[in-house]
Image 1 (cartoon, one colour):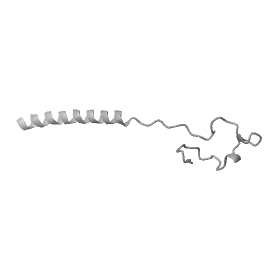
Image 2: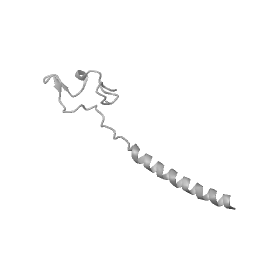
Image 3: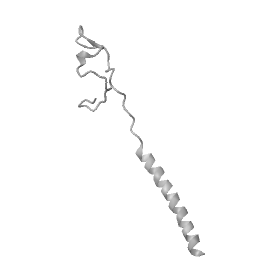
Image 4: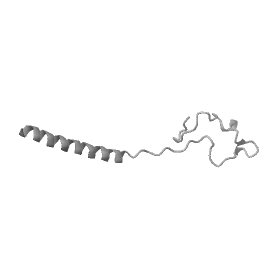
Length: 75
């Protein structure tokens, strides 16, 4: 389940907050500071670091291929 503010909630969250276990009719509001069903934010993966590793790996592979091709061409 997802709200308009892009926060992610658990699938078992009630559609209406008044149906939630933590809703207080006396206070006319939730008893918790933060919604119980709100999922924690997922950390974004560091794609820049992965790209740098991939580029370094490809440079090493191309360097090795270059030296192998030169040795093969000379013989």
